[in-house]
Length: 444
Image (tube, rainbow, N blue to C red; front, side, top):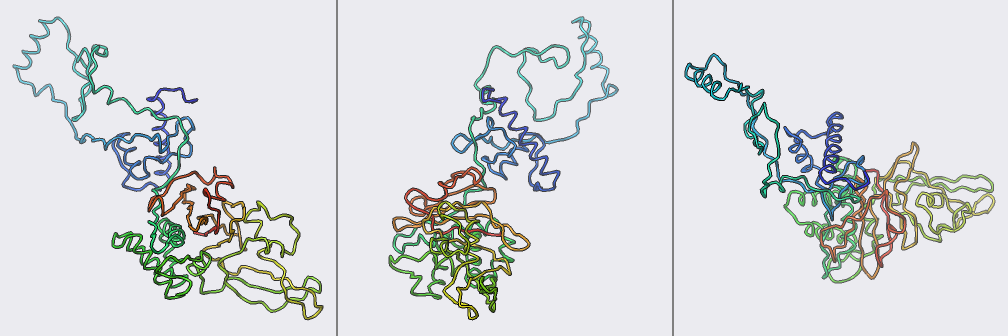
């Protein structure tokens, strides 16, 4: 298992791992009915068509994994032989002439002819052997090899680390005339979240506000091939322009405030935060208010206003930022003792998204964070980057694969980078000359 085994044996091990995964899915009733095959090759081919040839079982040894640069060669669809019952002719059905002929052959050769113990299935290929006797003579390989021998050999698999991925997330081609990159980046994350979580999105996110309802409607048309990605983007952009004409221009090369865009697109009509003013000196509490902040500002002034001294804010996790974000100093004085009040937030209803403004500051992105009582898990689903007057984005898919999209250079295609479990904080903090601007977490 160190990588020195033959290609055929490596493929044998790979196929056994794939068959093991298929069996587990079937046993747990998670295998689609369309995954079928009468033979090993047919079954694996059907499974690869569903999962993609780059899918690798989690139990696969590192020496067996393949990658996008050295892929597992997926053979053409094997042609299964049609199954049918074949009945061996009865001896009684033989006529006298056949019996006489058999007897003559026996005496002529002085050898006993033993009938074959089996009946070959129709559609199978007879092995090219020195002897075609199916029951009495051991088979030997021929000395002559034709060109078809090499084509029947199993593909040698590369000894490299593989990638885990679903189908490539679809992005948007940048519009140089209207500077669409802010919309491209946010919509790239939202659209692919929608594709992965259609039922949950339809139930919870679609009704969050009118813009998300229209977003869902437009991109359903995209999935039915009635609109292009760019046409749907531009239609939503026009809807945003109607809401805030000065903030969201549709013509010219004016930049777009990414924070305003995120806050407007993911605005919640219902308040989900309870805000209470507390005096830590005389323990007075003042009437609570409700609010629905969508963006949480992870910048130095907020950290300094934290009630608890926590040291430097550099390289802190998002989960560590929750303390200063949810309990911070204010400029309001207590009416009882005139000491400065503290503002405390409490989540009363879990929102679908939590977005954190990083503004280029070096922050460690937790793969997930827990909030609420009882605890609910928010997963990192995307990061938007800014630099050189241009936005780009990364998305984290359901299987943990991390993809990068830059509509200016890659168009609507995305580039696979790594798995979130393997990604370090430096990788997620920036992309080339662009630094993180907004991190998006979701319950979906």
